[in-house]
Length: 196
Ligand SMILES: Cc1cn([C@H]2C[C@H](O)[C@@H](COP(=O)(O)OP(=O)(O)OP(=O)(O)O)O2)c(=O)[nH]c1=O
Image 1 (cartoon, rainbow, N blue to C red):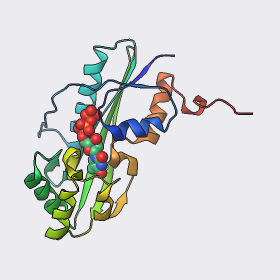
Image 2 (image 1 turned 120 degrees about the vertical axis):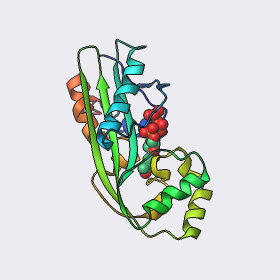
Image 3 (image 1 turned 45 degrees about the vertical axis):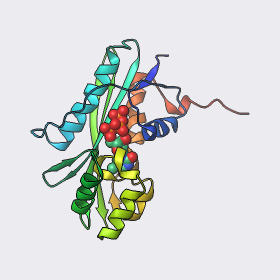
């Protein structure tokens, strides 16, 4: 069987892919992410996922590479990770009381084929007052996350409702990913050996 490589430094993506019980290795891409605002959100995350996967594939041509990218989109704004507390506060003020979209792009590549797709989840925030925004920034959680929040952590307190795949918001739409992995020879239903 081919080796599966997760082209990501994200601990969330590692945990989500681990749910498959498939063996895999991680090899983060060193790609510098650029937001091309001429692209639609889905084109953007698909392009970044593809660039990350291609970057690692060039070093590991005998493997199957999985790359992913997540952004938050609100009206015409594409929100990545905040650079500092002020930027995080601005993003959270923008998302307060509104519904935004979270897009995750996924790319699977091996030497015979390439599959690229993206998934959108709608997330609605409660109205956030300044005290809530400061509290949340002081948890330290916003800084390595697109849109300045993590739905899986303290950020759960900001969210009124979501529509779509929760795991897509966390960084990987894992149930769709495993279905694509099947086309690359990885079947999660065969990852556990019978116990009796
Ligand atoms: C909206 C949201 C994002 N995120 C995270 C998922 C991603 O890790 C991160 C977006 O950054 P990405 O650039 O997609 O990924 P990354 O830099 O963490 O990892 P790599 O490029 O090596 O794969 O934001 C959450 O953990 N929870 C959330 O609710």
